[in-house]
Length: 246
Image (cartoon, rainbow, N blue to C red):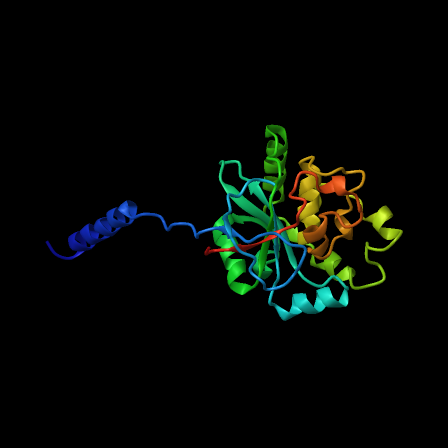
């Protein structure tokens, strides 16, 4: 057989080989011991990390733009916040505004995305102390699917560098309240709004727009509350470094 016949057989053979191949294994997943400290110390022994909806991701970005803007806004590190969600198909993902310097909110594959950030800098996970109820999980899933593909709110993020920012003794209380569904978010805002939408924190006291840095999330989760009960569903001993090796 020659010509098109051989090409067709070769093509079919390649398709069959691809269909029989194994999918790439997800990266290993471990957490160091939690600590109220932002440093490069790996606090062992590590433990296997089993993700669940409602866990909070925190990461430091090596991009000079984010370091400069966060420092000018007195927000400092970490620069990125996100939340673990369950997708409508049952898989776990990470809902984040502007992941990897993109201009959209996205739900990304969980462990590969953690590995991407870990290759660039430190990553922390604040685990849930208690699992979400079925109702909370359903609310978080529906919320996350609605935000997937929305814009990253770069304009409002840059506004945090100006006197018009939504943070301050009075502005945090008045302007920082939850807004629910809107056209776009920046990362820390989306993480807190997600928790409000799922009923994990109180909408009356949460201040998503007053979050610019992930640092308050690392410490007590809600910057403006200063109430221990605000983080009752999460580990009260802060976050642990995520690693892809023991």
